[in-house]
Image 1 (spheres, rainbow, N blue to C red):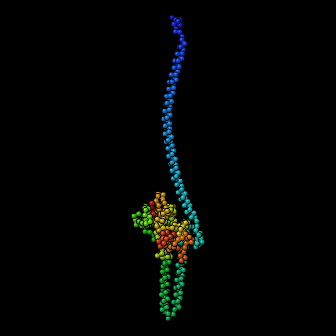
Image 2: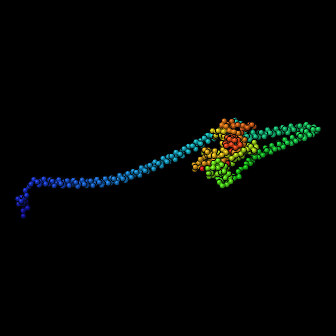
Image 3: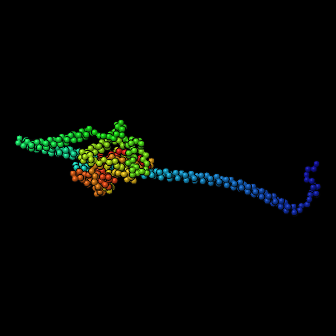
Length: 404
């Protein structure tokens, strides 16, 4: 066999034509164009897929951003609300601290006594004045006794000097002597009764007091009890309130039991009773507002303080109103739960005179006998609208009314 090139093929090979090269190039360009179109289509398909994924991504991203912005707005609003609550709480706390600071300053101050020229702490000033009043009363009683003894001695001398011929005149002197003796005996009985009352502290406490509850707390601490609204005592208190304030319902009536404050009030009442008599004692049930619960709690423990009043229209002192509408018109204590509170006090008004803004505790007007008037009033003296009290011990906060 022949394994080399076939010599006969060359003889039969078709001749080469120039058009064949051009056709090959055209076919090559067609194939390259087709490959380029196919590659472009594939790239466009990838771009469409990427664009759709990007759109889905943007949608979910926008939704997450919106959720995050809503959460941030909610957190900011909650922070603002807490900040407002904190600010209101801090304001109330600062006001309360300022009131407590003023009270502490007043507790540390002293008041000069006009009688003994000593500086007395204001907590002890009321008791100090009571002691002076008791000493003055004792001196007055002793002076009366000396006068009666002198008159008796004078009559005894006259009777001894009488002759037997002046029997009728002696009988007249004897009658005068007996009359003076009786007066002296009555005076001695009054002195003994006053001394026994002071010694035994014979105080008549209200019948609704629970002495067992008082015995469980230290002397001077208050005990507050709720009185039944349908009971006789609470009904009387509510009726006195509704006479001038009919459209504000009373939700609670509480009784105040403080043995120390009541003992002071009772002793001061008995002292004034001995001085001016029962028909001029002039006891009244009057209303008083403290504006804040802090001051109300201070009164329940310490009692009223006329020295705290620095602005006054009818004289310096502690003010009380005949009508509850006066005290509930801006002086009531407003509590955190929305209720309001007032005191209804038992006040010994004694002898009164019309008040003036010129009267201070040191320039209080005096009676003809030299003692200061027991109270100043605004309005008719027999039925005043406002009563101003100088002596703190003549006031007892008997009841607390809670209303809306």
